[in-house]
Image 1 (cartoon, rainbow, N blue to C red):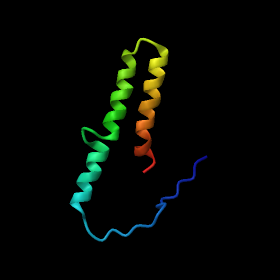
Image 2 (cartoon, rainbow, N blue to C red):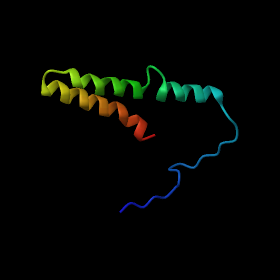
Image 3 (tube, helix red, strand yellow):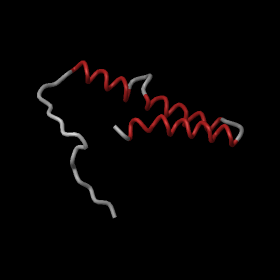
Length: 72
């Protein structure tokens, strides 16, 4: 059973918008050189690998690239 509490880990106070920071965050999360695009590349390339060991390595790398997106 899961208990969901909608509470931030660290309290924040947003007083104004910051477009420079928004552009930076977009580049890190969704841009062409982002963690997400790297993870997707690794996870799609694993299907063309001929050996199970190579598939396993690409799967591990791809899931590691997804970690920053899940824990921030």
